[in-house]
Amino acid sequence: MFAPVYFDHNATTPLDPQVREAMLPYLGARFGNASSRHEYGRQARAAIDAARAQVAAAVGAHPTEVIFTSGGSEANNLFLKGAAATMKPGRVAVSAIEHPCVREAAKRLVKQGWQFDEIGVDAQGVVDEAAFAKVMDGRPRLVSVMLANNESGVLQSIAPLATAARAQGAFFHTDAVQALGKVPVDFRALGVNALTVSGHKIYGPIGVGALVIDKRVEVAPLIDGGGQERGLRSGTENLAAIVGFGLACELAESRRASDAACLTQLKAKLESGLGGLGARVFSAGAARLAGTSFFAFDGIDGETLVGKLDRAGFACASGSACSSANPEPSKTLLAMGVAPEMARGAIRISLGRATTDDEVGRFIGVLTEELKRLRGLSAMAS
Image 1 (cartoon, rainbow, N blue to C red):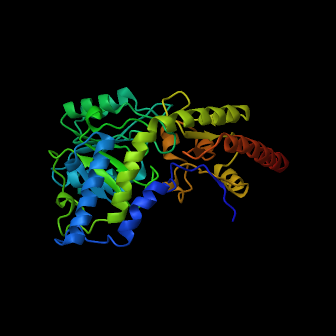
Image 2: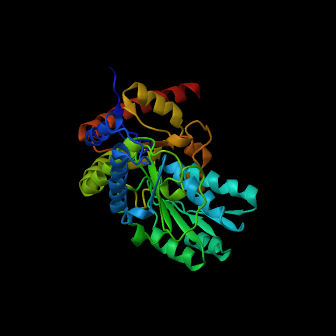
Image 3: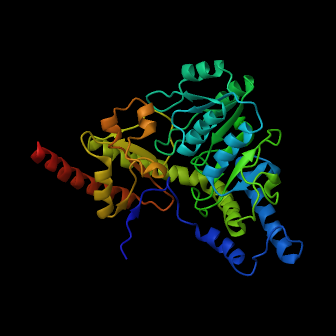
């Protein structure tokens, strides 16, 4: 069977074999409902409690601060919509490079009387200090800035932003989905009121995530019912996925340093080759995730090139996988001031734990040939 080289780890990661093995008993004999009082239920409850402790340990939180959800999108919506539901309408502010599940959730609040503010970024994709200060002058009640961008890989200095926002009386949230397992994520050190993490970005299962939230922050549930997850997320828990998520968090933390060292070297080789081909690497001057490279070539359509690379055996992405159905240029790049023509050419390579030096070298070779063909066609058309 044809199996392309996988260069799209920011979209999702393969399930770690250890995680799969940990999940299997809960897809078989240990199938109990954690709300049941008998032995099957007690086993399920104990497994969820253990996983909650693993997730909490990975982000420096207390287990009671971890609320399991179906993933990052639900967790982000739970915080923004849930917190807003407990307040009188005010201002909600998010950065211009947020994932759609944050940006659109915040915009949804406008229909409930809230005012929406977008925090600008500089040409590298880093939150602009003056823009942030101006938004804070408006005294927003809710603020969300992502820790690591899913397209560019840019890392934000969250702690000072959170401190400034909280000084204005705002609740501060960060989407840490792309950051967990790649850089340190410490709930206390970041100084945030809430953060979001997800299983399938760290070699865990799809369909599970968590909102880590200070218990002093009042949040209304999105889903009412049996009162699971402190009453904030009713519904029978996804037992096997939660068990897998817990172990994935533990493994991600234990491997974080070694993974980052390896990915840093691989990205350096990748971007050296890209530079030789005339690529523009976005956010090259900012602190970024070790395995993420976002780039474009002048006059080359990103979707077309991604299709060519896929047929040549390399699976990569044009921008964000979560907005791949949208033909519009990357909102992240537009916010950075990149021209729409260049933004349409953007390609994201996100390397992973199993990526090899040989794969990166072969990719540069294939990319070289595909660019020659596409540029040749462009020359003929002109």
